[in-house]
Length: 86
Image (tube, rainbow, N blue to C red; front, side):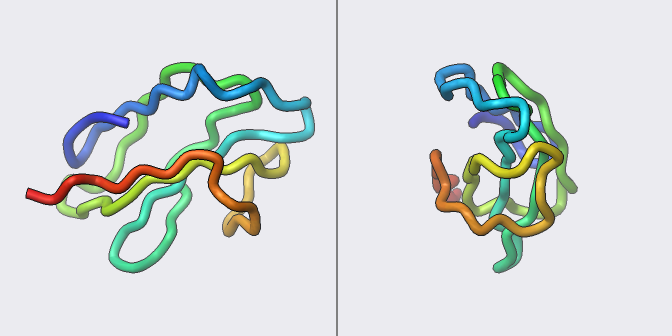
């Protein structure tokens, strides 16, 4: 994942395709909470997403969840990445 506060991109094309009843979902750790940032779909590639430019995302994670996405995941992340702090 790369980018600056406000607009970022996730490169998830290496993830194995999921069945039609599942989707990859992108999460961000923001102010001590895990927030859904975007549904990536069952076969993700490069996806842009936005977040409040005044809010610092501390980490990102990608989970495999139910097809329409979920408000809170119960699955372990397939990918996790902490954001380097300045």
